[in-house]
Image (cartoon, rainbow, N blue to C red; front, side, top):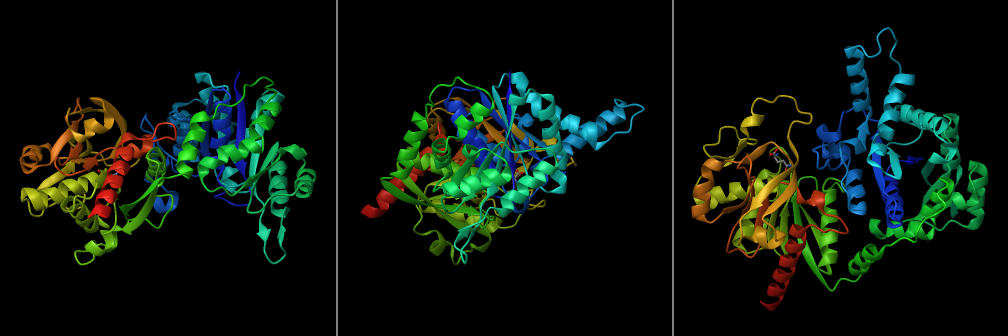
Length: 538
Ligand code: GLN
């Protein structure tokens, strides 16, 4: 029997519903339950794959090639389990399914309506993963209570609560308790209104998780409980944490998991085993060294654009007992004059993924700087493609070499569109997506990192290394050390002789978790540490 926990948000967005959902899931998983988390997003795009990072932050990609909300990244990083297409559903996808069915004649003779047809489809998807034997499914409802577009989702929760046995469903409402500095007071009114609004729609929260910058007194908790009609022990304080990875422990102190289990009428549960998690936190909080890594990208002012990369550095830093300071370098503003002053002082360079030509020249200059100065270099997707272009121009002698994404008339298309992509015009879900195998050459840096000849990594791109140039690259010193065994596509390039220079066509950051930090990030940080030491000696 699967139980359902719904997480809604009130008062404002960006309260960290994803982190609260993931933290609760972590605690339940640590107690031995099989848990998954899914996110229902009220916007009309079928998936976030067509949204730019300014709109929606990073697009996370699952093993099965779904382009999803970045919260799925948190779910995977916390739980160390994979999510899939079924874990992220949008209004667009719901309507698309219902409309396709209508065209097939599934509702012949009937008027198709939000209730029951849209809500039925939402409920079907809310329960879909139960087939996989989960004890508890946590569903995060995107947006904020009161938004017009989230209404069908709230209504679906109401119906499910009405249909299922009473103790099979539970609603956790995440809310903000603002502090008014002038009055020196925490205010409960916005939460009261948010709960009332939800109640008007027939859904009443069982638990309030209150984001706050100041501790909640018992008095205030009692007031919230009374006015919002929840039990006093179900008012949970969620204080600001120094790291998102502290939140499961904060929630454990507040007994969020136990209160949930009680409400779901689960009476037997073992003590949570958080040994690995705590071990990670202790390393994270007690670094023995420090490195500065330059993140070269064009969205650096956006916290969420490179979310998985930043988190992967946190995992890898802890593994190395090293504090990784990320130095954001805007690729659009790097030029030949300032490249030295901007990058000098760094211990490693990561050139970020991306699309389109903005900031490309800066990325190419950054690669050149890393290559010529023995600075550890790590290129991901577009970053890898830039390393190939830089090498082509400056080492192979192919002046004007480029990717046909940025220059369709380049004399040397060293990065080119895959044959299979050439006739695709639709933009949604048509890239090379999801996990693909890669065969690694023994004796290469990639092999040293992975310690395995066959790996599998996730992709999200249309362009590829052009195999016509493979031999010229090899002769000039850039080796293709990882190849897709089925398609012969180049997945990894490296420069033997450089202390650490690697570019990967895939996205390793998507598979780094607290319990399994990604080896590429771990080795890159290690190389940065070594660079920093060498620098100190010189
Ligand atoms: N724009 C490049 C491509 O489509 C790289 C994509 C990426 O970095 N994710 O191939």
